[in-house]
Each structure stands twice: as C-alpha cells, then as structure tokens.
Image 1 (cartoon, rainbow, N blue to C red):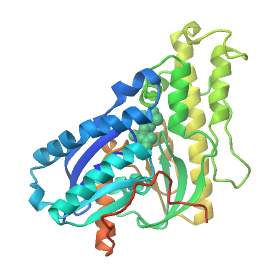
Image 2: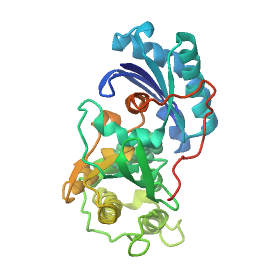
Image 3: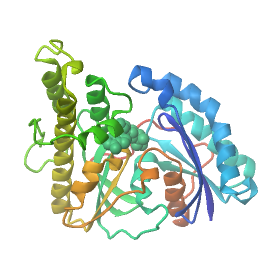
Length: 339
Ligand code: KG4
Ligand code: ZN
C-alpha cells in the first residue's frame, strides 16, 4: 500500500510516499528557516502564507522523485493536529482535495504520534511493548506510554518551554543562529559539560513533568549578569562559549534521561522511543545508550518535521480499519490529555 503523506504543522512544508508503512520514497521537506531566522522563531502568519506557496511544488517534487504516479497512490495522509492553525489548514486542505479528486481514502494523523512512529521508518523495526516514548522538539516535550503505536497515553509534559525551544532561546542569548539546537550541539562537543553547574529541574520525586524555563534564565544570568544586561555573549572566550553550550546540554540531557528512567519504572516499559527535532542531539543519543532497555531513535532524516512519519503512521490506522472523513478539521490542540 502506497500512502502519500503531507506535513504542514509548523514551518516545514513536506510530502513523501511511503510503502507499507516503512519504505520511504520522494521525501521532500521545504524548510522556511531562512524566513523565520531574523525573528529567532516561527512567525505563524509568515509560515501559513509560505505553506500556500510551497505545497504544490513540494507535492510535485515528491511524486516525481518517488517515481509514483498519483493514480498509484492508495491513500492520502496528513498531520491534522496539533500545530499552528494557519499552517495546519494548508496541508489539510491539500490532502482533502487530493483524496476527493482521486477517490482514495484520507487519513488524518496526530503529529506527535507520528514523531513516535518515525523510529520504524526505513527499517520497520519491531519495538518491544509497552514502551516509553519521549517526543522532544521545538514545540513539544512530553512522555508517553505506548501499548502499541496506535494506543498512546500521555504520562508527563513540560509545564513551560519545550526543550528545543530552550535550545533556540539559549542560542539567541549566546548570539548564535536559529535554529539553535544543531549549533549548540556542535559547540557542546568542544566544551566541558561540568564547567558550569546549571540547575536541573526534577519537579518532585516521582514527577514525569518537565520545566526548562529556569535553566534558560540561569544561562541568561551566567552570560549577561544578574540584571540580564551587564555584559553580553561577545565577552565570552571561545572556550567559555563552548563550556556554556556543553554545560547547558548536559543539564538538558540529564533531565531527559532521568525522566525516562522514572517513566520506565512507573510503566514497566520494555523499550524507549525518542523522536522529534531534539532526538538528533548527539549528547542525548550517547547518554540514552546507557538506559537499561533498548532505545530506538529515528534515522537522522526523520528527527525533524517530515511527511514520511505521517504516511507511515497512517498505514497502521488504515490497516486497523480506520479512515478520516473528508470534512475533518485542522485542530491546533493535542489529543493527548493526562489519564
Ligand atoms: O521536530 P521539529 O522539526 O519541530 C517541532 O515540532 O518543533 O524540531 C525542531 C527543534 C528546534 O527547536 C531545533 O533547535 C531542535 O529541534 N533541534 C535540536 C537538534 N536538531 C534540531 N536540538 C538539539 N540538538 C540537535 N542536534
Ligand atoms: Zn514536530
């Protein structure tokens, strides 16, 4: 079964064709980073307008490079929640139109659930269940208990910033570019993670929730002084800059790993799945190897937002006899609420 996937939840316009939930063809991602860079974050109105311009060229390129004709597409999948409403609307409208015109099934999928599914792309690996899932990106930092990829329960979430957001804000404080995650990750490798002890917010003994705003403020005070404007990042030597990056990364990774360990204990999880933009992080990938169960990361190409993960997850939904109606709405909120 060949499924055409569409993604437009935030600032990436993407399309891909995935066969039987695993084999990815024509994976195309049009990034809008250049447009949002000067604002150091995503501007929703610009994102939405740019999706309109990008969606048809991205779909055409995906089909052309996949070698799959529209007539051979068996279903159309789209991430319809959660995300920026103006962005979601473009992908959802494109998907509905295609499904209707082709007379093929439409499957709306949850973007966060698709990030979890991304670990199966290319390999089709079987993950022992129940598993603990961590989705960590610019918009999300949450823990899930998976009975399978369609049976997912929220067990913990950030109460303020997402971890990727903290990376992006710390990069801004340090005068580095946007998005900050990959840059800090690279500079962290050159520094000492024990140089500065930034706070780790553990949120109570058994809590599976996260908080990253205190850590971000602590980096701000360290770099700019307690009034936040006594000096700036230009006064740091290269070694000091690398040490701040490494120490900040060490604090993020420590907290993520600690919460995963707690979740494994509480859910009797047999495996760990880590997805979302921050799952590309080298420090996190290294630290996760020491967890007591098998850990699954997506191939690097599928850590950040993409459409292959949505097409892959849609295959499971359709195989389970589920299908969306042509009047599904884009929904900005997560479907996952605490049990
Ligand atoms: O999944 P994604 O593309 O979009 C959201 O759903 O948010 O994730 C983007 C986020 C950004 O905050 C970016 O800084 C972060 O993922 N990121 C990283 C790395 N690569 C991307 N954070 C830490 N280390 C990385 N290597
Ligand atoms: Zn995402």
